Length: 574
Image 1 (cartoon, one colour):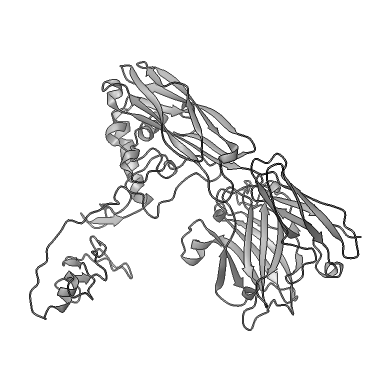
Image 2: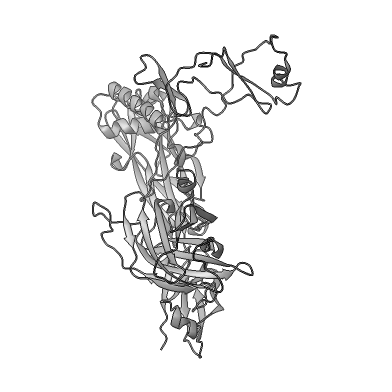
């Protein structure tokens, strides 16, 4: 338009229409405001096909005319969750969030400084005003209600049927419904409304079957009694049973009534650490008749994050011989599920920091490093596969809330040469967190990073395994870890990316990536109440003199979080 064009036509490269752009109000490259007023047309292709609309238009002679036929564009995903929308549960206590859903994609609103111009945005900044407006309308309709009743009215009247591919942990009770929240006289409040508007059972590590009971209180602020049928709906996730204390309930005018809800989850089928696990659904209160609560139904979500646990333990027998060898006995007594033990050379240990290192002095609960170990395997004729295991004292909800840095000196001059960093993949590669921790290697001498593997760092866990290849520790013209130079010194630090805490582990450790002083890579899979004696642990006395370990670190990702996921076994040689 600025160059004098009368219109712009986009000829698509496939048979569909190009993406709908909407109003163009700024230069997309530099953000300079400019309202485009000329037609901007999309034509389906492919333009390389002479028979397609785009192909015909491209082949038309200059100066000839063409007819454009406007159509209505379908929007089949307008009720779906946005691709960028995050989901619950809440970090830390695993409570259900969000509790309600609102429109947030392609929303037109007032653009500041434009007079009567509009702005088109997507995200929480557009969904939140919808709920805020609904809250204002609900308060206007019920000016004497308490805050918890206003919230309960909004959350309790959400519509799951109006959200495509609905999931409780993604959308709470569903799409916000102002017509219902302003009209309802009855509100449903879990636990008296003191802890949100959902039955959140939190996070549970299951060594036995889970059973929990919570109460839903229904308060009737109206002048007429209201009767409801009570039922479970939208159950999803790990196998579970929901038992309702009543199948129907009547709430007297200006009175209240209570329904107990009991959730039961079998420990054996809740699921292990291989994936995120959840138990979710709705408790629905459906009016018996049109006159009951004006025919408005109420819903309360229930939610639990379960994890079945093993109870793996490793015991080393007595070392004997010039290069001592000991039998490793791995057991899983009273384990709910099968578990594994993975052997590392234990190199670093740190004390439990009771106050963390956050600026406000509060406890740093997810980046407080307890121990660090390392293992290595041949990967090819010339390089090794190395894995660092970082164990924290407490569990994280998502590992990407942390960053773990392992600094390596590979040439023995006392200066760090490379840094192995366990951090969110999206944050480093795209500037936007995606919840996946990857294992990066940075150089202290040159720019750039390499990442060949994702980290193994389960949600609600306390061990992050960071794999790399030795080629990543050998940049051209820089110190190089190799079979001829196999030893390195390392130290560690953890960062809380949410709260700003830093935990620097005291001391350093030494390791030979081609020939560990203590054998690593031993692995045992043990069934519940089973045992394994297929592994031995060997010490190379000569190598121990140069790269001694504190002992053996036995990692069991399905054990309870914290110290149980990384058993530390002292090994002292006389």
